[in-house]
Amino acid sequence: MTWLLFAFLTVVTWGVYGVLLHKGSMGMEDKINGRYKAFLFVGFAYFLVAVLAPLVMLRLSGKAGSTNFLAYPTTGWVWSLIAGVVGAVGAFGVLLAFGAAPDPKPVYVPVVMSIIFCGAPIVNAFVSMMEHPPTHGLASVKWQFWAGILIAAIGGSMVALYKPDAPAPVAKPTPTLEAAK
Image (cartoon, rainbow, N blue to C red; front, side):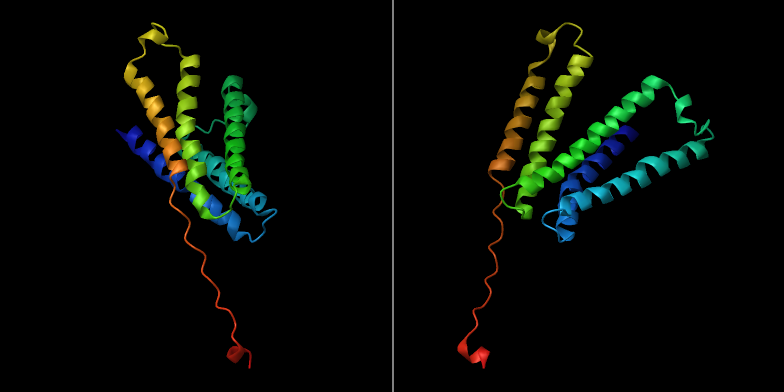
């Protein structure tokens, strides 16, 4: 069951990813380049977690073999590199979506993230079926699978369409004549 714990770890971390990324980009206090600055720090974080951590784990396991990365199987490193590029482009897409939203307020974070996190599993299901087709063809795929695809699409749409309203802006008190004296 360890795999399930790791899956839930990813659910939680990716579930808060959009909120944290939006906070980071808004915290840059730069409406034009704040998203790019935030993405730069995402890259630093990826370096720490995705480069240094595996090197330490390989060293601790005694299977470091070498740091001669060209000695790794070509198929493995090429596909892994492509996956990393696709993941990074997706992360950048999140920031670009936040920036292109009609209003940069956090109310669009659940809209963007619901589209991503409901759409991505649907794309994954179809790409996985193309990569590993069902043994007896598409007709053998159970109706519950197709219902799940439909429910995911409807769920993502409903979250996007019926998101909670943003809090009303706090009105600044208008200066009075007495306050000006």
